[in-house]
Image (cartoon, rainbow, N blue to C red; front, side, top):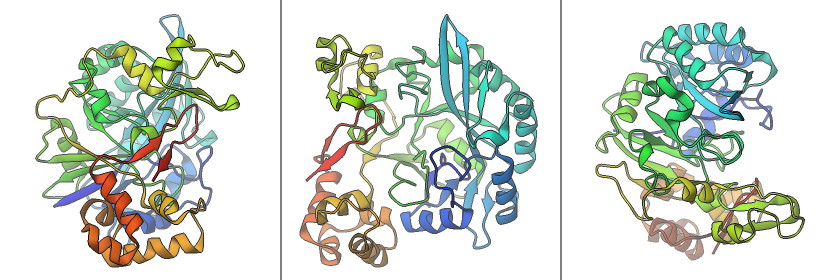
Length: 401
């Protein structure tokens, strides 16, 4: 059976998140999106963990269930900030746990290293990634540590501002326990395939959503073909990188991501890697350093030409959230306008979920339930011909149609 999972989200106690997020709202919009599994997010936060325990139950599969049977997987994100190699490093890591007992042990460990109640994504100063992984493996080797949004400038393990030049440089002897990396919104598998040192890692995609709205959760996801929904089956599918079980990832166009191109938000400057190189990485308006984006960073580390596809690689499909498409086709920038919600809900009622609309629905049937322009944009998206103005320095890209 097809199983779609978004394993990296945030609860209400992380910075810059929706404060009324609840398991019930996450389930409601995850179902609307077409997700089968969603990460709990932020299991390190005491109040959120208490909420999760009240709302969800364990059934021995490693996946928690709501009262209606929807599946949640225990997940959290931590920030490791420390010095290594004469440079301050800032690395975000996603942690996935097989059960609540293991979560308790993780929180006991991390609670000795930092203040878990201070933020849903706690910061651990002076705790290298090597120490994090080694300590977690001593608790339970079923724990998964996945470097988050690996290319983003400020907190990606390979980012331009504080990252490393390889996964091994960061995790050293503990890299043997890292079997997957998260591509992030500003890159896709094709970009990552250009860096041969990443060949040994599965490429996963998650939303890193800071709210439950359908233009956030599930905007990136992982698609599996599984006999059962369990922690073990999902982890095995990722680890094995077999396209028969890990069938594809869902990716936004990387230009949509907030750090695809180089730029300076304060001056409204957005530059391609070649343009940025000509300016020597400086803003042409104010002269300050540009935020070097994902595409430039990949160009710096790539040892393969564009278009290289590794043998037996997990495929991917590019798309943007349906709300983004409707916003453009209807000429409204208001995601929560009554007009847009009406159009969105009409499509969901007709096809069952957003993923059914974007991945499966017949183009002519989409037109019947919306309009020709919406159907055309979805068709262009499926054929890889959608046009997106690149995002830069914390600014999202924009769909042109």
